[in-house]
Length: 141
Image 1 (spheres, rainbow, N blue to C red):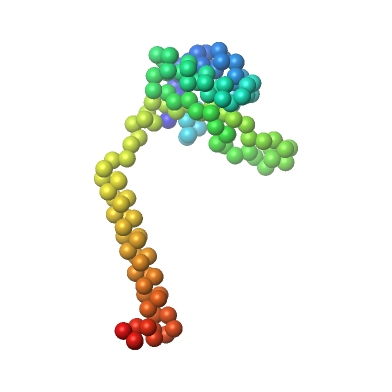
Image 2: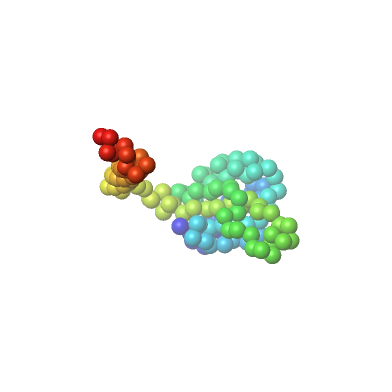
C-alpha cells in the first residue's frame, strides 16, 4: 500500500509544494500507506481543494489517493506530557488499494455468519426466558 520513491517525489513536487498549504517535514512509509508529515499552512479545506485539483492532473500519480486526516500514529507518552497535539497529515494510498474489493463469496459468508449469530442469540434468549423461575413457564406449556 506504500508509494514508490518516484511517486513520493511526484506528490511532493507536483501537489504539495505548489499548493503552499502544507509544508512537508518528513515522509514515513507505514502499513497504512505513505504518510507525509509537516506543517499545515492554511485551512484544511484549502489543502483538500489543492489535492483534488492537482493530483488527478499528474500522469505519475494515476490511481494514487491523497487524504488529509488526523495523524493515524498515536502520540508517545513523552509527546502527550509535553502537551503536543495530533496534527493533520497527508496519507497517500497506492493504486493497489482500489483493487481490494469484497467478493460475492465473502459477502455470502458474512450474511451466513450474521444469520447464524441471529439464530443463536434468539435460541439463547428463548431458552433463558423459558427456564427462568426454575422452569415454571416450561412446565405450564
